[in-house]
Length: 130
Image 1 (cartoon, rainbow, N blue to C red):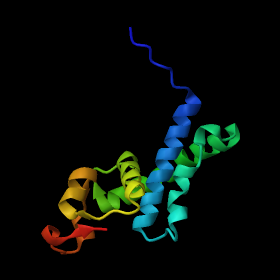
Image 2: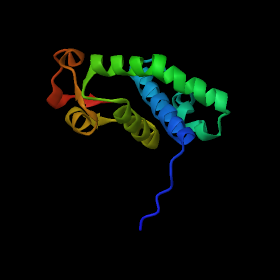
Image 3: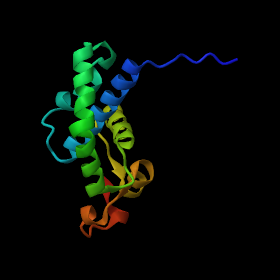
């Protein structure tokens, strides 16, 4: 018999808030809206499960009403099939290496296909994502 710990609603909300904030940080980084490494790391510095209930609920509400749509819009404009989960994974990889430098094809294989309009005629076989 497998004993699986039941995940509480609070934990689910905390995980969703953390994932969305990490995805938003990656989007802001790609749009050059992040001004410092500390600002980029902010989503991973917060202990979401320890937030007061009102802040957690407010963050969850913000995800549903605003942030989810902004992330989806960013992904739809720049990628094909990329979700907040993949952006969150990209966040972790950038954080682990204090940056990212990867051949374009490897980036697409790992995170998702980039829309052709974003590439703007650059030769992908020579390109590196930094």
